[in-house]
Length: 68
Image 1: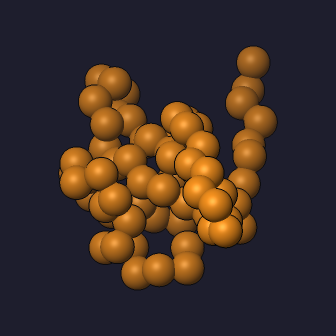
Image 2: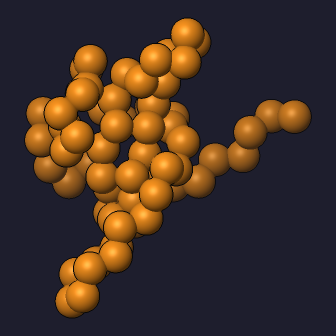
């Protein structure tokens, strides 16, 4: 993460700040002229309720392979 974790509440609904090692689901990609793309990622609890949702630059996230 390149910003303090408290600055990742882009959508105003976080129950807690994102942390390094959290996993999430890619929700959307944000494109704007002359700006780098951002990725909207959501982390939900076991009950399906969102814990946090935030925008990340590509260098802040990495894909993972889910166990099948």
